[in-house]
Image (tube, rainbow, N blue to C red; front, side, top):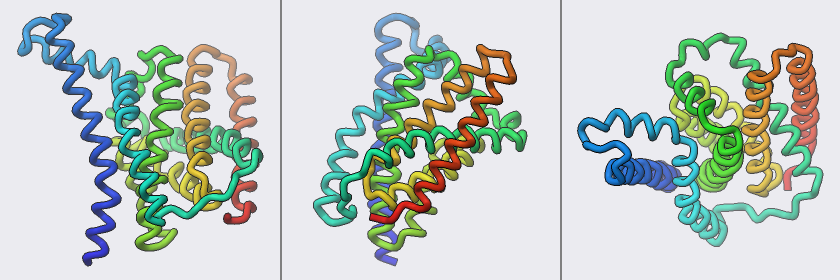
Amino acid sequence: MKKFFYTLWISAYPLIIYTAIQFLLAIIVSFFVIILGRYPGAVASLGAVESFISRNVLPITAAGAVFASVFLILFFYLDGQKGRIEKKKSSNATDFVMAIIGGAGIAIILNILIGLTGISGIDNTFQEISEAIKSTPIVITIICAGIIIPIVEEIIFRGLIFNRIKFQYNLTAAMLISSVVFGIYHGNIIQGIYATMLGVCLAYTYNKTKNILIPIFIHISANTSVLGLSSLVENDDSALTVGIMVLVTLIFAIIGIVYFIKRKVE
């Protein structure tokens, strides 16, 4: 029992720190929005401040991720010193190429499969998040949700949580628990299902390569490809164009999956 609670604590506190920094930054931003007079009158402007936070949730989240990364990278380094992280061997260029194309393919396929269930229409939280993303300029969205946030999330969920559970218990427990927590952390049904399934793929490839950069590349590729395809669908009514993109990503997914399944564990 002592081992269980110890593992729970060392797995949870990096996520608690990350969440606390995000929450604190949102409070600071709200405070300055009121103080600077953009929305005068604290009581009267609470709704306006909430609206401001909602419209700028991606930049605020990304900024919080950058601040939190200082602590998370330190934890990751110290875990390596303590032997919680298996030492990686050098990854080859093929690993990174397959991470990019495989990540893009898997992300699109997972989104299509989830879309076919029709549950996105009943998930109000997901709808609100989608609207917030759509209202953000695409360049900022890609930088924040496509690059910065995936890097920090991989350090948390694969670099720290996965490795710590694996060190205390075993690979299977680490893959399943880190992936489920990754899904739950997204806070809604659609992203939760998607993130859980993607998390299994990320943990699997990380275990194969022992290089945190591989799941980072997969995650970045997955997020940017979904954002790119969503933008394409909105601005291009051609079913042929979308169909070709889906077919290409399907091929990418198969290539990436086969490659990492056959790849030997370092």
